[in-house]
Length: 157
Image (cartoon, rainbow, N blue to C red):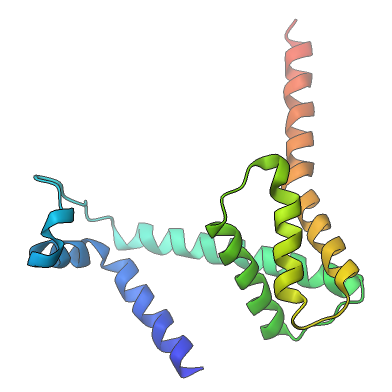
């Protein structure tokens, strides 16, 4: 737990002081080849960075809660911290794997099976939960948006 806490604090410090870190690294001889002449990273206000990280954390908590509630409804039980770690690992792997929209559901399901399958043998329920979260967060908003745009198009004629 201490390692995770230490790394989290270190990442937050680097996040809030990234411009200083970049200036420090580009001042070093080893990293000069990566710097571009007259290129500076602007100092973004700390309040804006805090806003971004809070919104990101809220988004993560919503997705984690969705996964946990749906998996619980389907009979898959994880402890709270274990479930958050599983969802974190799933999203970390999905962020690294390049996908196209048509293959995303299959890749998302395979990753969820790989990670959650370590802790549970209820593979069908894990996959079904992943599909439901995908439908709720990607397909449902896309369909509603399409209907909304279609309605606007036909009402303006």
